[in-house]
Structures are given as C-alpha cells and as structure tokens.
Length: 113
Image (cartoon, rainbow, N blue to C red):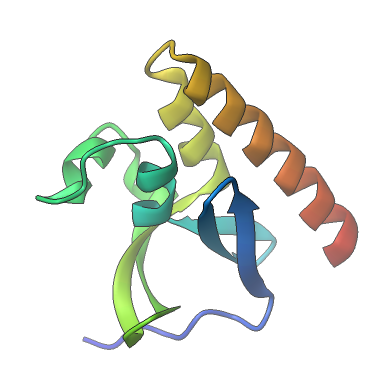
C-alpha cells in the first residue's frame, strides 16, 4: 500500500529544542505524532501509537513524511488531536505546548489564507 507524499504546504514548527513537522491537506493541519509526543516528553521508544489509542480514527492516519533518513511512513494527527493530548494531563509543560500549538495554528491559518 502506498501513501501520498505530504502536500507542498508543509514545514517545521519550532518549540524550544524540538521541531514539529506539519503539513496542511484540504485545509486541515496535520502534525507528525512522534514529534508531538517528543515535545510532550512522552516515551516513544516502544510503540508510540499507544499514546494515541483514544484519538479518533478520523483524526489520525499514516502519511509519508520527510525525515533525516529520507521519506518514511509516519503516524500523523490533526492539530485538534494534538491539543487533546495536552489536555489529558495537567502538567505545566502540557499547557505550554497547548499554547504553542494554538498560536502556531493561528499563524499558519493567516499565512495560508
């Protein structure tokens, strides 16, 4: 099974020493789940998908994205799903990440429009 490459409207959202890869497809902002989980400080060494079990199937999927090793199939989640992940716990970092994602989406919407 092949997956379409990320659309041209893609890039990196910097957060501290991390970068979150994103792309916009049909007006929906998608984020690479592994990057979001890294920013949240969640262990992704084994089965990173376990953090996404409560994420609806309509808000997650697979996409071919660019990585340091070249194109690879990755789990992607919508911006709304990423924000929901930050609401599952009550840490200060989660609130900071939620604010970062909200701010980044507003900037991106303005740039795309």
